[in-house]
Image (cartoon, rainbow, N blue to C red; front, side, top):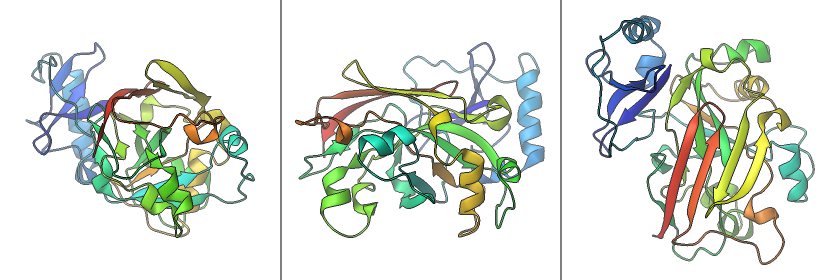
Length: 286
């Protein structure tokens, strides 16, 4: 299923994109797309049954209707740094022997076509297309990558916007270069795991002002999705509604020759992950 939330910010309603590409209202069946839904097999079964029944779900007019983040009330966002061989190479970094972890606050999340704000004082705002993993079952001390994949509810497109000067040159951890407002567009859809049989076979692309900048595949991940979830479960409990951003392939501004083409107000970024939808953001000054 392709689950999403549509409407004005803060007043989104749950919806579903059916197999014919028709947008359908789920608000008569579930209150929202959130951790409660993902953890409730019976509720998900009702959604599946309604989606399969012709005419049961009302049609929504998608014209001019905003897509919000496809998941409400996110618990935590755990991010994996330098998780693609080609991205580590372009930045001159050693290949990590264990996943590099940092966090993004849930309040960085916006819709897939919402405005992204260039922070005040920023000189190095960068782009990163990523595969986001959404947890559906509580995960702690998992034994294998195969077991870990069974705890995944679904997948989405994430844009891990980053301010490199804040992240790398200002001391401390990476977090202050990752947590500026609007720095995690998510969606348009939460695609349930049954529709993504192999998360290591997805193409990722990103364009800036119509120019292709990133063109990678999750097959290049250093730590595959199942291993990332297993690894994280050794250090923290993952709950339904938690999100994992799994890293970005080569092609970010930081990895390009001088003068590096960092983002500025007026730029337009478009990105997609195969089968998970497409995003488009215009940048403005904060």
